[in-house]
Length: 329
Ligand SMILES: Nc1ncnc2c1ncn2[C@@H]1O[C@H](COP(=O)(O)OP(=O)(O)OP(=O)(O)O)[C@@H](O)[C@H]1O
Image (cartoon, protein in one colour):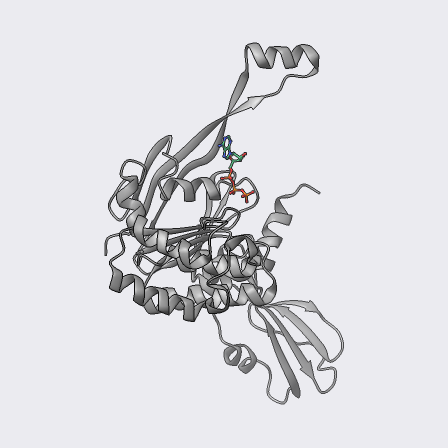
């Protein structure tokens, strides 16, 4: 299947002003400003298939928003190629915009002073959405995102959670094939985050809308995105599933065995013992998908096992451990 989105060795270099110190420096800044290049995106390649949901993550300044801006046609790459639905998004910005939806968590695309229903109507006209398609989507999205109680209210009177639900609904009004979201759950409370996550999962599964989102909230990824792309300092760090992430970053599963009484020496094939005394024993499991039954089956006959607990490191724990290992002691 042909990729719906692809990035081929993409780089984006910005020039940033360097402030010179002191009063003389301020004068020099004015007369002969000095700037230095910043590589926000540094040789990134990936391909996304139709219907995928991909989380794009990395620490502050890693180049996430810059990549989303290149994919949505707001910025052009300095080198390399981005292709979205077979087009170069910046060169064919209008055609690209008709087939994608974009939500920027920190910036509204709704008309602040107008009732929400009128923002939807303006969107219909701008995107030339056929009336029957618009009516069907409007009804479905109002229902799914529970917008009916505030559809007539000016956008500036909406809470952040209500506004975000409305932003996402509007971005989907023209049936885009791809939905880009930059920090869609930023600032939302737990309940509002849950509504947004469930909705995005549903849109991806039921409509087959391809989703690519940036986030700092790793639970967004766990709930919405089977695949994640990690970037750091503009470079690609990882591209794969959460299970692959565990293997790549060496985050092992931890197994706790609780015996009726101290079993003496216990050995589990290839597992590393962590706590070695008493009735409770802990092991780090090898980096494979060996099942619990296989592992425990290797215990000597007569082991009086009372309880077994398996701890799978979550994505947050894996990534935190990775970044902590990079920080010099
Ligand atoms: N318009 C711009 N001009 C100059 N530098 C920029 C511009 N936009 C981004 N940058 C720089 O490029 C780098 C990447 O920025 P970007 O906003 O893409 O990161 P990010 O991963 O989205 O960060 P965050 O998680 O903080 O939103 C940063 O060093 C930023 O200062």
